Length: 324
Image (cartoon, rainbow, N blue to C red; front, top):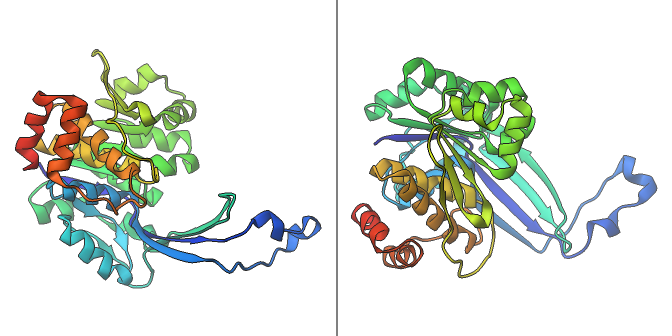
């Protein structure tokens, strides 16, 4: 099963200020702020929702196709993804813009000052999925993640017109989209991904009830934080899957992307929805135990040991045949 993942490709530049922003702000001068902070460290991490998802899928051996836009500074990042089983042949390289970048400084109270540079991400709207499909011999599913809004709309419409099944996964972009845009992005999706908060926001903005949305999508996949995930289909009982026990909790960033990576890998393997959700929850647990979205490793024996403990021998036997 050939799965393409569209969405953002970015790097995160994270800094720590050993003080409090509040101590540097003068109340009657907030209209003319001019500050700089001497920071203790700089942590540069690979990120972007599409790249994060593809990284996890690559670790699971499902050879995802990354579709997005980056700058000429993408070479090192591309090599990293290539080494981890990701097909980067459909990444558009901008001739004039850098790869999207998030720059953030955090103080000792965990307050943050950040900026997001969209950069080359704005060129995602220029990518045609037909050229991707022609290059790889067809597409069985396209997961359309948070990206340039015009690119998301174009890819959704192209999937509809070409009869390619798609997953709607607008996550971070939902806040800036209006109800009409969200209705366009989800209508006819084979899968609709969101967390609990986004689920409510989707219903509020579209004006559609949960039942109306279920009538317009094949499957509604809602992540529930520490409680796992719920999968709903019209006319079927919901499927609920819990999370494996955590060994530690280091950083929640990227946990949702990891779930999607595991779930989509399960679909690529051809296992059922419950089993795919279990793989997603297991991979998400590895990420929450690690600082960074692509810093975790997948040691197969360890993965299967914990998967077996969480979901039982029968589930483990099925997954093991695909995981190797």
